[in-house]
Image (cartoon, rainbow, N blue to C red; front, side, top):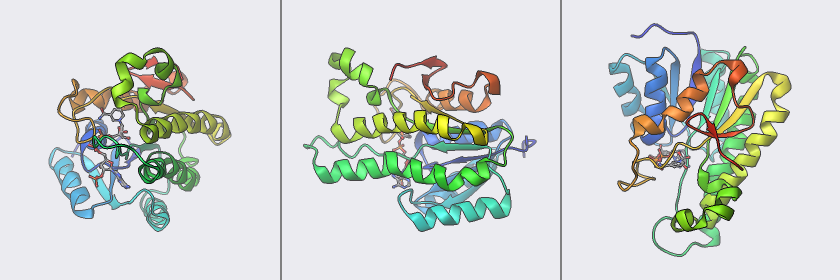
Length: 243
Ligand SMILES: NC(=O)c1ccc[n+]([C@@H]2O[C@H](COP(=O)([O-])OP(=O)(O)OC[C@H]3O[C@@H](n4cnc5c(N)ncnc54)[C@H](OP(=O)(O)O)[C@@H]3O)[C@@H](O)[C@H]2O)c1
């Protein structure tokens, strides 16, 4: 096993895609990684893969919209580590990218998973994050949640602009900004990351970026020196994206 650096990182929706790759890269850097997955079997399989690669990896079941699961997750972390250094709110959906018209139900579910769940999970884990001397929360957002991009780059992004997904990420951007202020006195820094357009089940095979590169924005936010952390900003590969 890689030598541990004493830090615990939790990544939601880490059974596949960008989340699993973030967990792998952080695990290889010595973080103890806790992968959550709504499908327990899939979570176990991902954790086993990472353990085989030399990571200190663990898995906890978490349907991100389930309040009992969130409470159980907090209990698990308290019992096993009594702190949390890094929370990556990664789990997300783009239900509306099915080629059919959107509707209120799809929008409601998208907001629940992409916006309300990160709020609820972060709130539940604030007591454990407060124990860390360098606590960081990274929210997986998107340039599609940037109102500036919608206003000025419409012709390039219009085919991806669905109401539920775009407003969920715009909301996540505002949540990031608010929490970067409200959690500052507890020593918790908060930023949003745009990973790029990445080949995953959500991003599709048409995407130009592989997961290794897609995970890099988050990994650099986790590892950057504390005094350089872009608190309250939306970032892609170290560069700020306009709201
Ligand atoms: N790929 C891109 O191009 C791109 C671009 C910008 C932003 N992002 C963001 O990056 C994040 C990761 O996306 P990805 O591309 O890696 O997608 P992905 O491969 O589809 O993975 C999404 C992960 O979220 C989990 N998830 C979805 N709904 C959940 C729920 N209700 N409870 C628990 N877990 C849930 C999935 O679990 P299951 O396997 O059980 O479904 C899966 O582990 C998302 O927030 C996405 O919006 C991606």
